Picture 1: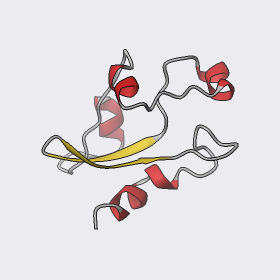
Picture 2: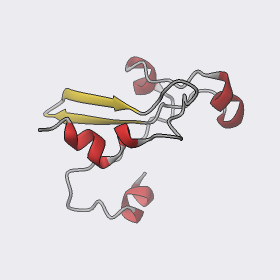
Picture 3: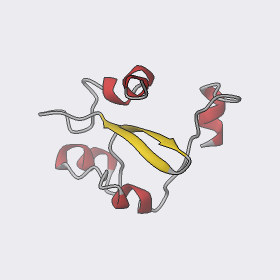
Picture 4: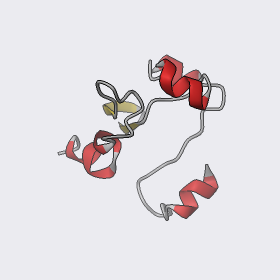
Length: 90
């Protein structure tokens, strides 16, 4: 996660990259990707594409990029991109 954050130049920003190697948080948030299409390609235990706005440990917003026929949000990831989650912060 540190290398990914570094490649995205997130140092000194409000962004925090977190890993979930055992899918504990993913399952607790009900964000596990279970559609057979992506699971057959990526394997089980994957997280849906999402962005979360958290302030002092309180979840303010969760945007999930998924839609009919697009369970992984590949066709339209806009909800989980920076502009998508920042729109919920206004």
